[in-house]
Length: 620
Image 1: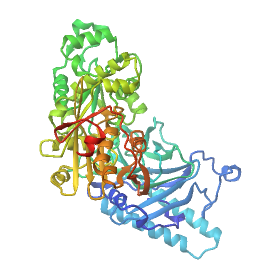
Image 2 (image 1 turned 45 degrees about the vertical axis):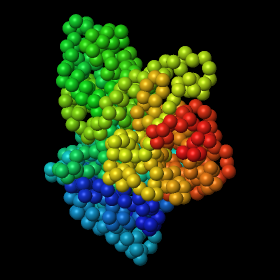
Image 3 (image 1 turned 120 degrees about the vertical axis):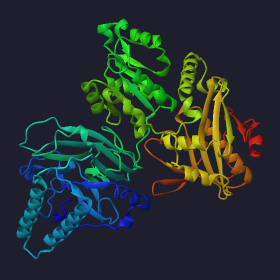
Image 4 (image 1 turned 120 degrees about the horizontal axis):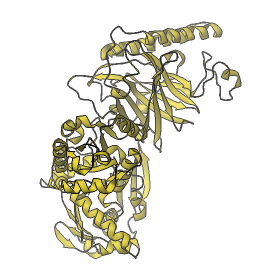
């Protein structure tokens, strides 16, 4: 619930983009019960009541409290939403969302009824024909009664599965929020639960498992919850459901104990699992027992081999003697499975960050397995995006939703591809010339063919996994891919890449509407980042559809925090922004402009070898 007693401003649901309205209703049928936290505007530096006379930022509300949100809580009624309204909040400096309550989950239909009653009660309280001072006291009493109701102890509180934050960020930049759950003032001290929750541009949903804060809520406990934007000066955000929830028995929890579920409501696939060693991969402690007394856990090895077969990579974060640890792994025939192992005495969180950087994948696509509670909590605190797993639960890893990924020839050879990349990096370090000269020496070849039944599964996998170089944000379910095959108006391009070190496999997918012409979708695996392949492909389609035909060529680009850096390729090629609407940019390449060609990539189109020269590509 929200402070309806002091809020009069409303906006139309039409003020939100249609796709955002839909996203705010996705969990509606999945939730059995939810809390009704009484959210209020509050100050991160509150010193009530002294601050009302000393703080230069104090702005009185109708009830005399301090206005921390520029326009208050602006209500946008959303009858089909998971929450029956969306709150638009424009934060002032030091502003935060705050609530104090006891745990009490309501069935979804009952929660909706109480939300509507809150709205009616607030409207009546605001409309009473009372003098200003009496109205102020009345509003304060209504707010007090609402708080008392929220803090009433349930006889047998139902424990939630998770805490959910739904947020639409319309800003150009990502906004990070700090979520804190702590004992209410006067309660027995306990370490507060705190998470940094990133809100990228667009719709976000973070679902945080209750396992991390179960000691702070429950029978006889009052707690406080606060959400603080870390860039709070004049920042506007839209909030949907922000409450504890319990899902229906038939619906599994999305995300993990430390990682929010992605915006599409599905568990985000893991790209790499990082393992501890002592009493995790093997029984025993290396520096205490020595190599001769260690015993490998065969069950863990089986999990590693099975997930490796699915294309999930593996690495190590262990505080240990590096030489001895690698020697034992070599003796066991397991060293080949671990990419960029981090075996040192630095914090595990730093080791995991090093793995993500070396593999060029997002922190939020990693899982970490360790037997020690201290190490798991250190990683949770430093890297809340990482999924953290108790080593005792290793056997369940292959069955987790994050590991249910398509198994293709590409996935089976993914580890080998990363090994080949290590060779490339080694050669690059020893190369004396400039970077483009090195790329030319690598003999990079790009094969382009239409989408078909043979490559459809790999394209599906690519669409589900790629983030850094997905320029439209499309995910393409299998049904949509099947519809594209043989489309008379939309041409599809599936890209395979190889160089003198080996094959990268299928690395890219694109869709062009030939009628306009317009590039609708373009996505690449991060494995080919910085290799000029995206430049070569854009030059290829420009020569096929654009200047050579005398027509302007257009492209769709939805900028996100993750694809901003790689998205500069459009500007480098020569595209300019034609218009922007609902976060989607329409780019234009003018007819008559020269298409750049750096001569690095050789292109083989439609399985027929063609050198990447303007004359040959124009005829493709």
